[in-house]
Length: 239
Image (cartoon, rainbow, N blue to C red; front, side):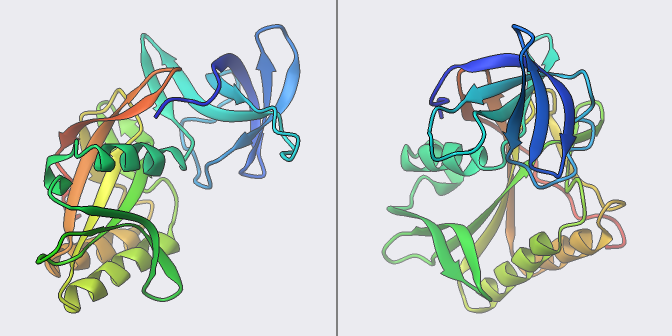
């Protein structure tokens, strides 16, 4: 998934009200950027961080910039826009680039299911069970090389896991896909200390037959694409 307009380097001044960030552009101009990330962004929103933003000239939008990346230096990046994974994943699914899902004929995004929810992707093939695929963006890293989910309490995430369990009970396939939007991580795990309820829901889901996958992302200031598969998070002990 290529960015629609070239990204510009900037420095983070502060993030506030979850979806707003004050930034300083290369020429010294200060601006407000949209932060498309409802999580805590632990370790990714400290003042002075080098970031990349996308200019927006749409007159219908209030803010002229969107915050897209954190630049860790040395060619390492984190993607902070939580809308990116679904767009990048859709491209990969349509191109049949991901082996576990390459056999499906239909890729249907944002389908209604469960209790007033939408599944990220419904995958179908004649003669086979439907696959309900939920996608999560993973950006938290507290140990070198380890990406963890979630970075804050997510009741919505736990609800999605319970709804995937229900799809399994109805005879469908169901899966979680954790997309690691960091180029500096090679392992995945659950942050059970941050959200024990989510970790417990994940353990129940895996026991019920919900599949789990994880993939890296290839990230540059030009594009984000799906990278190599990783081992999926293991259920937390005692969850």
